[in-house]
Image (tube, rainbow, N blue to C red; front, side):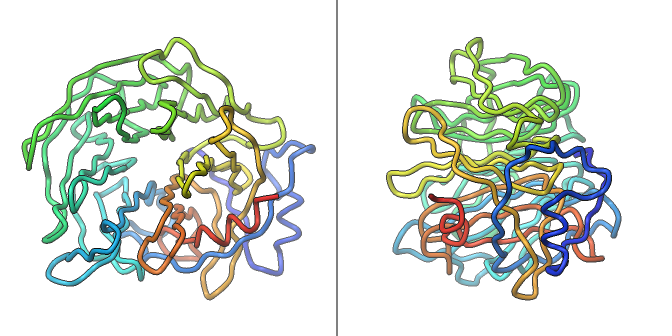
Length: 350
């Protein structure tokens, strides 16, 4: 994350901000962003005010019709969030921190459902690789192994299933990409490299569309790329920076499955907005942009780094949940905002 500008998101300044704020390199022809509001927020991370700390979230929901337990208490869903100065948080649906793993410089996190629980992993800039974690549906999150990498600096990260494999995609700060097939069981997980390539310059956010086998990567000052898993030599620039949808840095990238529909959400960090595409028509089809404004006692979202989304019932969110990092948390340390997917969908669908 390289954005240093901080803009006010008080509701009364919303229209002013939509026109841009001083210091933001915002193209004059930028498409407008519709306003949505957050439903809740997490407690702040432990790193102090002014530090670029909270970074990337991941969302898990218990299998349909079931309940899980965390530290002996019933839970319907969980949110993971990195403090890239200190470690990994587990949050409940009310935003309360349930667990903190002080594992150091974890930057991006993602997870895959596995049985009644999930396998999670995070890019680890301290140990230079991918840290693996497991939650079984009861108990708490525990370390589950490590994948050592040769990248210069682990940075972005995402996971997905493709061709019967669990894949872990590590994006280096310089744009180098390593894709690992994850294997093992219990707390003895590891990974073997199956593909490598270079994006070109500083990159971070990524997401796998499991239905198509496409891998989306944000090259921060260039734009959003689409790769095909297993054929990284063929890529398509979905959207360049500085046209009318994305302002550098291109940061968080996530795919949400809503029934038969699939959506791609990408954070436009430079103007604190998010662009949305439909993916289920063969080619990405742009829908709209949105911005998260202050409401319901929750401040607005600015300078977003990481974003994650999950369709279907996620605790109290019957159709899906979107979670974003918030750079300027109204005078407190950074945290994550929770947005009901229905709110976003109603705003961006034509």
